[in-house]
Length: 158
Image 1 (spheres, helix red, strand yellow):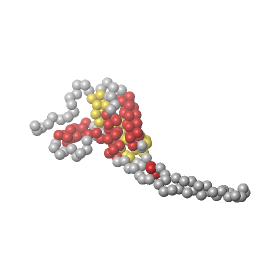
Image 2 (cartoon, one colour):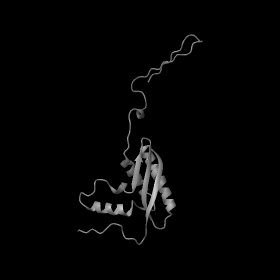
Image 3 (tube, one colour):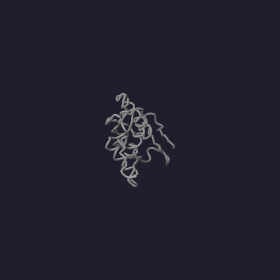
Image 4 (cartoon, helix red, strand yellow):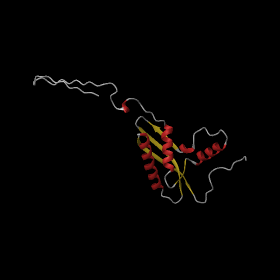
């Protein structure tokens, strides 16, 4: 990149500046556009939320039940893993907003778990995507009691 400045010999004249730029100049980031799909942000957020102690599961009981049944049926899984279960993302050009539905373990502080989930999700999404996370809404749909059996239904066929 070459910049050249020309000035007049007369001190009373205003300086005239000309800038010459060679081809290939400019930052790489200004030479194209990166688009991040909603599903990518949902996966990142889902994994980050599951990493928090006190989070038992993601999604409502109904969505977990249908997911468990779908996973057991050959060919029933549409290729979409349960990583995104309970996560909904809206992704714009530079910002994203997330809605998470979680199940917490009995005995933990729901406010503390929600705060930890929010912080972990924001850090992971912003670090990996460069998007600004404007909000993370968390809905606690259930509490996992110690004596509860697993939520997965018994298979009808063996």
